[in-house]
Image (cartoon, rainbow, N blue to C red; front, side, top):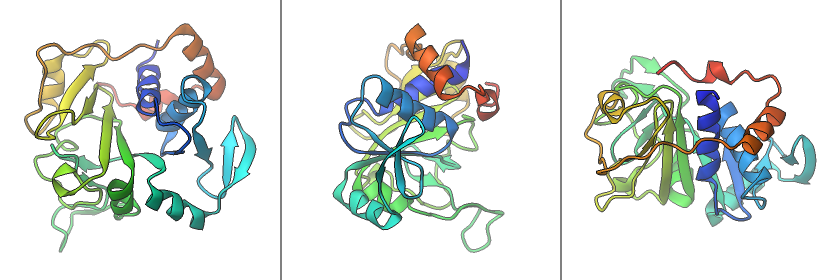
Length: 231
């Protein structure tokens, strides 16, 4: 079993119980997770090709032009799983620039749809390399809103080390589970701020044999290793 398979299942679990909404996963592993969720415990999910069509296992099942996505966003009937170049303890996310906004060291994607996503509907994040550079005390620029800025719902943050959430009274990031072979101390060392850590931290759920078969069917090229740096 590969670490990437564990991450795919963790991404799938993020969509559990969502019902008939638009799932918008960004990147290979989040996309596999959403498709796995639809194929198993969340059959009501709608998944787009990112342009105008709703798809299911490669087959077109509906039409949703880009302008209609904004209606779905505003209504809250969407769950997006984005990336994060930086994220802080409250879930503020940065995908815009590294360094001071006035003179950044690196220009990234820009804020894109992150403000609208985080204020209107559930948002999760997949960060392939858990490190102090990504998990920072304060993001250089707020692209996606955190709980201290009025986020609607930041459900989970999934990394190559762990699953994290914000199920605390203060909405500080909490360690929910660690992946196989990872210790709590590994996650603490890779995080640039103090996490909320329960007395007992379980291991992230492993994929079942049936789920592994579905993942293999969804990704026959099996090229997920390149999506996850070594922990």
